[in-house]
Structure formats: C-alpha cells, structure tokens
Image (cartoon, rainbow, N blue to C red):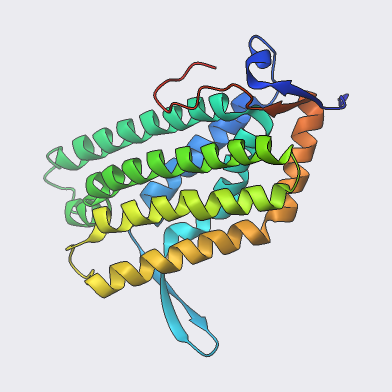
Length: 246
C-alpha cells in the first residue's frame, strides 16, 4: 500500500475525499464505547499502591487506553467535523443498547429458566448507568475534540503530546464529573465518599493513561496521516456539537 506525504488541508477540503480508514476508526470507537458501558462501568475494582494501600477504581478504566488513542486519532487526523459525526454515531448506538437492555430485562422469563435474578443483577443497572454515560460521553467527547482541534490550530500542529494530554484533562474531567454522580450517587453500596474517591481516581488514571500512551498516539496518528495523505486543520470550522454534517 502506497503512503502519501500528508499535506495541510482545511476540514472543509475533505468533502468528497475517499478516506481509507475513517470507517474502521469509527467502528472501533463505537465498539469500545459499548463494551465500556456494559462490562466496565458498574464494577469497582481495587489496586494496591505502595505507601497508600488498596485503592478503588472503576473497572471501565481497562477500556480507556484504546479509546483514548482512537479519540485523539479522530480529531487529529480527520478533524472536528468527522469526530463529531462519530460521537453522534456512538451516542445513537448507546441509546439503542440502553433501550434493548431495558426490553430484554423486562421480558418475562421462561418457567424453567432460573437465571433471571442473576441477569437482572448484571444488566438491571444498565439503564441508569447508560443514561449517565450518554450525558458524560456526549459532553466529555465534545470538550476533548474541541480543545484538541483548537489547540492544533493555535500551535500550528506542534506539540501533539501537549494537545492530547491537555484535551484529556478537560474532556475527561467533564466526563467524570458528570458520570459518577449521575450513575452511582445514592445507589446501594456507593457512599458519597466512594463516589468522590472513584471520580477523582478515574480522572487521574485517565490523564495518566493518556500521558503513558503518547508514543502509541504518535505512531498511529503519523501512520494514518501518511496513509490518508492529509493533515487536517479546523480553520473556519463550525464547532457546534449539534449536527453530523462533514
């Protein structure tokens, strides 16, 4: 496969251009989003830290290394408008998943099926978690994408590490501040102290993950820019989140 030298273009100049890997990046982003909602969000795990002892954290953090790279790639390689389109695709998929979770849990079980209680224990909280996740995801991802795109224009495309970490500090800060109180405040087993502890821990861990994965982000972003042959800058972009046009 031939790789072209990326050249600077505005986001609007991509209209009608055949982008080889955009659809794959979108699919990966949505898949990770759904998995994090179903498998990771509702479980609190713990890790032992030297000098601190056991420290609780949300198991969803396991999904974030991949999602961070993908989220950065979307805006850095394809621009804010195409990242916005993917965010809305993920939002729609999450709404559908929440609806189907509610329907499936509500279906009357067969008389000889004895796993209804266990099934409800696993998926019964999904609607509340997903509503919180949708609000947090929507706000956090748009903040992340906006900050990254604005910083790219302001820095002339320099200091990718500073832009990815800075946008994560802002975007994931908003995400955590919305998600944990909405999802778990007042829930059984979740004290106020636990909610706040997990919230702060998640935010710190997310930013730390972003910093640690900076070399991976550089490799993926660089390869995709060469493969697509473009380096997108959001000069003159309409940054409203309410739309899916590219």
